[in-house]
Length: 162
Image (cartoon, rainbow, N blue to C red; front, side, top):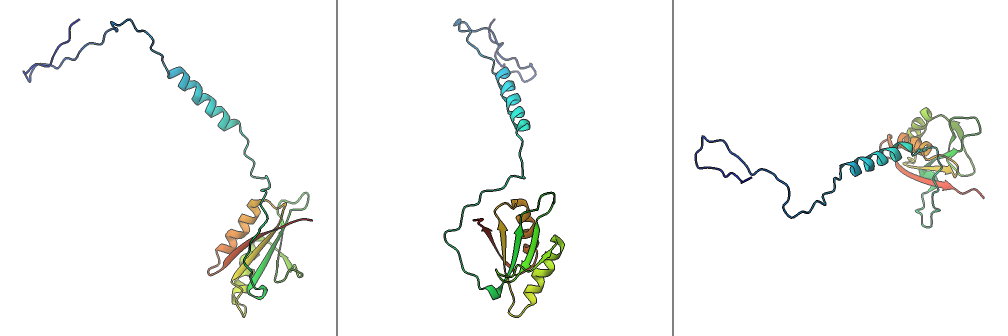
């Protein structure tokens, strides 16, 4: 078939070249559609089959360099791993390493940090210490509560079990 060309007459409909078979005899056309479908099905399968567990403990490296914070200018929050059968970890608010303080709930942490800010001198530094087996989500909950108190500086450390 011959190709039709666009004429100069604006009222005549436009005709384009008709698509025909290649005259070179090259018939090596590969349809990629089935392969793309299979790749997307495999991708979907692996995304849905992988179990992401937020309960896994995070292996945090030990600190080699740290900044010293004066103990009288800091409020210490210690998070101990949840005892067997308990859903939440045990949280203590204290001011010294030797004095673990008293156990508090997540709701009481903000009040304790605000009380530290009103102390003389104000304890603007909040140091969260967590046992190695404490889940990161628990540390994150406490740090978000501390962060909601204005003018606090948050420090997080990990206690190494010997």
